[in-house]
Length: 137
Length: 137
DNA sequence: CGTAATCTCTATAGTTACTATAGAGTCAAG
DNA sequence: CTTGACTCTATAGTAACTATAGAGATTACG
Image (cartoon, rainbow over all chains, first blue to last red; front, top):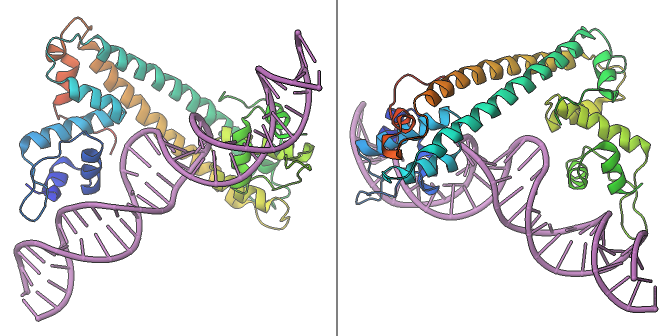
């Protein structure tokens, strides 16, 4: 199948496939006589794998590590679990941080209903005060 | 004061200050005879304002809009409130998405305790299955 | 006084994961 | 036959910095 069909089946963009190839996540495979890329079901499987990982916010580098170890049967998979743990911790931090941010923004939002001039806007005024709002390092 | 002192007082990096100047968020101000940048308390105030906004995840462009309107007394501040509203909505979406992601990752994590080889690792296997995990578009 | 560490400058490239653009060749349908 | 859809490559842009190189200025120490 050609790149457009692969993209459709995998639910991603054509340019993204070419980008993944460039980054070494998809193999530089066969080409037709007119230089069009050709793919098979194995490529689709790998692309699905990649997108799956991306849905879990794994970085392209991490995915590359996973792919390149794919057939290294004897290696221990300990690091895979650890990698997931790190991601879960990261996500906890992000959620916490976003929640705090949300509260700050809601506080801010209440200050002004939008009927003022910019000079009098309590939101703008508040943003000018450097009090205790360093919830992000 | 020189750039290092400003950075210290504001709690940011020297390079960041130069970057903000380049992006038009801080004025290209005075220089000493040996071309060192010179700052005063007003600059510190503005830098604090910028960092405050950044803590609220406002983009540099949004901050620029806020700064450039700063003294336009007569303009209505309606858009400021709306901007904040949009941010709050954004953050709600992000939190929701991260929570779902976290559950997926926790599911994944439970599959394997790290005692397997990569070939047998249930996490890796699971990542290879393209079932219903498209929680992000 | 010399020198070594620290601070400052500019310009450029790298980061992440794409996205957009330009310019060109190929192919199928009407 | 030509119009539109698809493909190709190469390059630049995105956000908000970060890193690097190479050079001049200043300060602290012995």
